[in-house]
Image 1 (cartoon, rainbow, N blue to C red):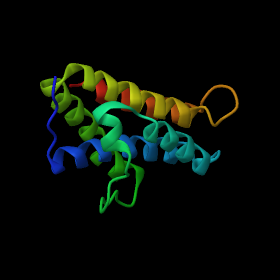
Image 2: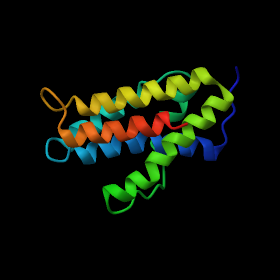
Image 3: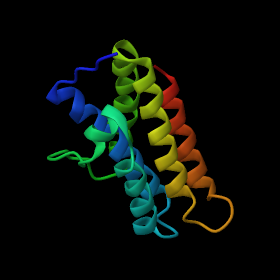
Length: 134
């Protein structure tokens, strides 16, 4: 199938994916937020297919707010919207996006030795829930 994304669609996908990494970084602030962000970013820029082309760049001009709650208010709905948009156009690309974001979240969580902190595990759950809500 062919996929056609407007500039707004691309911004939504970027906000969702890069925002998910930002949420994981914020949730891992007690450990190494920079390392979490780096590992998650590497996962996003390693994506393939149409989604990979879109996620190559972080979103420009997005204001995430002053708190993690404000960031989540923007990112979690964007994750659900991205999945809905991609499912309508190409279910395989929706799966690709979901896997890409999941790998980025897992990569960010793995920066802690052993199990992710309860805070990171809860943030990962919220991200997964938003992806599955579509």
